[in-house]
Length: 487
Image (cartoon, rainbow, N blue to C red; front, side, top):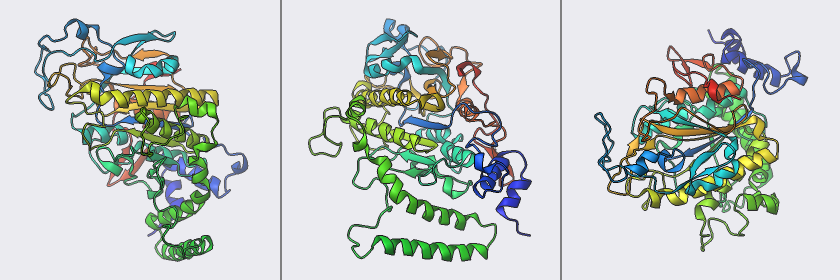
């Protein structure tokens, strides 16, 4: 016997089904308080944040060269690395101890030490909470990346942004709820699997946008060669497809795929008006463009590339992220680093950390610092979470003299914004940055995900969907809220 989506959600109880049902009924104006219903209505508890921007450093950023200063590495630089135990290295990365490749200095009232290559973050350091005892489950890029983006180290599970989209719904019906800003040079490990909706309804998958390119959103407008396609004809075609799809869906109740396709057509039509405006940074003030380092009058795609190329690339995405967030997008994912190319333009610095990390790290720091300052200036930081992450860190020992191997045993995440304690460092690593100082109580990605959901008003243990006979959730069967980083 078939059942309607509304009946299914009603009978699914007080978990995510109840949240989704509240959103559905509210949209249909069937709730008693629908006219005054807040975007956070029906959540498990009062939220402190409404939106998220995730900054993802693809390839494995080196915590010991950027954020986690280790005097012991300076003291023992060049000496044989003695870990006191057998170490399973990804490659041959167990050479002598390697000191940080840049000098560290103290910043802010909190006295946090940062590498000089990420010095721009010093301007906002008192807003940030660092977590230095993160651990992963694998030193393989694809698995480590999926663990951070989906909560599982294998394909087939929804991205975190998909869960947020499903749980909170849209705050702007003219824009996607979950937007992805990939690296312009290509996709990171797993490609689009990092933001795929998997077994959640398809409309919750991430929408990829490439700011600064000739075609930021693929297939949003007809090809310029198709002169015969007019705006009226385009609308008529979409309306006809929508009607045919509705007739098809009515004959097949319970099949969500058609509904997702209909919603994608509807959203695409709305985005034709809303998206170009949201992506147009020329409307920003000179002061704002200067803040992001975008006041040089060029774009990343000019023949004469600006010397601060990476600043332009990453800052442009950060500014677009801010514009999307203030227009109601719930979750924006900004990527730095791709899977290909040499010299490396990702964070996988096996050969030369200084050469590979240098431009990426400075560009990231300039863009991220500007984003945090801009959100604060606009009053958005108090209910926006900024999450910085990478799939794993890098070893304190050297590889080939100048590089570092993968380190899933310890690395750094940092957060700031809505509900996050300001200017702290939580969970120290050991004297070398090899493993957490307290190996019994590390921080796992599940804990970060649980904390973010908590700040959004969602109990991570209740955010579940029945799939193949199992109640699946972002945090699997793990995770706890990191109370120490909550304001």
